[in-house]
Amino acid sequence: MVFSVQLENKFAADQRFYLFEFLSELQVGVSLVSAGVTCLLWSGTDASPSSMVSGSATIDGTTVRQMIVGGVEGNIYTLVAAALTSDGQTVRVTGQLAIVPQRP
Image 1 (cartoon, rainbow, N blue to C red):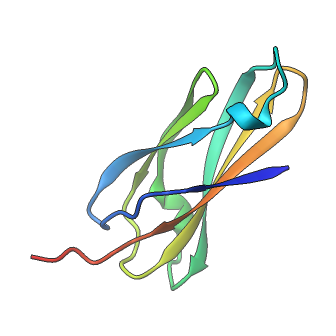
Image 2 (image 1 turned 90 degrees about the vertical axis):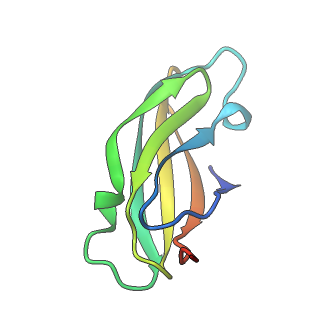
């Protein structure tokens, strides 16, 4: 099952952490074992959307945290956080990320 979340827009120059909450995807007593985040281009032009993912995802309880950098103004990206659970399942949380113009 894939769960979608609302992600806050960012400027291309921003470096910021995005959080993906998995609580609603987990059965009682099940925990997150490992996780990763990928970035896909949803609209616009970008030869390497995966370069927006900086470093490794970290797990804090039921939350996955990932640093996202760069992006192209006007583009919309899909961030996909995938986690392996202690009962052997893979669960995913996705969100759309818009790169907005920075106004003076």
